[in-house]
Each structure stands twice: as C-alpha cells, then as structure tokens.
Length: 270
Image 1 (cartoon, rainbow, N blue to C red):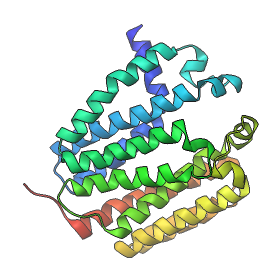
Image 2: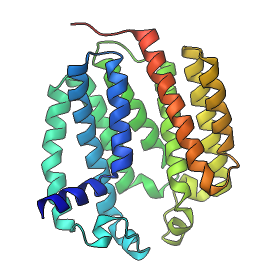
Image 3: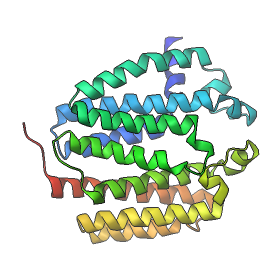
Image 4: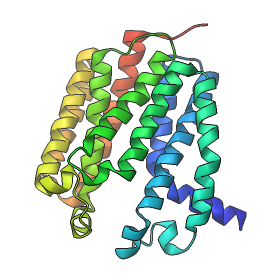
C-alpha cells in the first residue's frame, strides 16, 4: 500500500518534467559547484517541483475528472485529495528549510522559492488569464539565477533572458495538447486565446531566441544549427513530431546553457 501511494504521489508531481528540471539543475550546478553541494541543491529543487506538481493536480482535479484524464492519479482513484493535501503539508517545510539553509544560501534559496511560488500561483490564478506566461518566465529565470546567486555572483542578463524564453516556450508547448479541452472548460490563458497555430509559432520563436542567445554567449556552430532547425520545425510539424522536435531543441539548449555557464562563470571554490 505504501509503495502504491508513493507511485501515485510521483505521478501527481508530474514526474517527467519534475525529474527533467531537477536533472538540469544538478548539471547546471555542477558547472559552478562541486558534486556534493550540487546534489543537495538538486534535492531542494526536486522538493520545490513536487509542490508545483502536487498543487497543479489538486487544483485541476475537477477539470481532469470532467475530461476523464485517467492518467491523473486523483481521477484514476490511485490517490485521494486528502492524501495529496497531506503530502503538500509535509513537503512545504522541507522545501523551505533545505533551500534557505542549504548551499543556495538565504538569497539563492529565497530566489528559488520565489520561482516555486510563481509555479504555484500559476496553478491557482494565472493559468486562466492573459498573464499566464509570466509565472513560467519568472520561475525559470529564478531557478537558474538562484544557482548563480548562491556563488555570490550576479546572473548575466543573457542568462536570465534565455531561461525566461525557455520557460515561456515550455508553457506554450505544454498547453498545445489540451487547448480544445481547456477552452471547453473556459480556461483561457494566453496560449488558449491565441490558438494552436499561433502558439506553435510563438514556441518556435522563443526556442530560436534562446538558442541564439546561448550561442552568442558561448559559440558552438553544430549545436546552433541543430537547435535552430528543430526549433523552426516546431512551428509546422504534425502533432506526432512536434514534441520530439521540442525535446531535441530543449536538450541542445540545455547543453549550450551548461557550456556557456561553465565558460563564462567558471567553478565556485570555497
């Protein structure tokens, strides 16, 4: 029973994106810190992402039920709202303590927690407004900035802009598959109002922007070409291909992000 509850909670956390963000954070942190603090920071990031995922599933429960989204553990009956609320209450203090009193420090920890707050606020409010991209932009920028601030350095403008661009691109891409159901439920964030075609184009432009910024920070022509090609493909590719092209561009941009951070900022020694 305990194991099934754990698996259900991991599903409710949106496990794929949660692990992806945690892994990227770890890799980015190792370009500035050594592995020990990087691992602790990654755990703190993971806890923050759990909160964002848990609150998302909790708030979306009635809509997920309406659309019979059986992949969601609350809808399938694998998890109850009571247990999910209990998990949220348990995770909150650990998230705060580990991020503020861990390697991120008070400043870095507060910046990351601000990003987590943006993610939660999207679930509670921004999701159905014209301002829906803002929490994504601020949350992604806060995540990467918190890591640099933890080394007593100021995040470069290109760094923040690239992260924010990737965040908003993730927002538009994530909404694509559910736009019709969202509109039926009167969920009208910016992507839903723009529509599928417009959201694809915006996603592509944002990915191109992030790729060019990262290339300018640390030139790498092969990665630039691959990133741009697949970023552009997202604007017209059929549904069965679009998310594959998105993932390829995202991986390329993450590699460029890590390389640029390592080359421009170097490692942090204590």
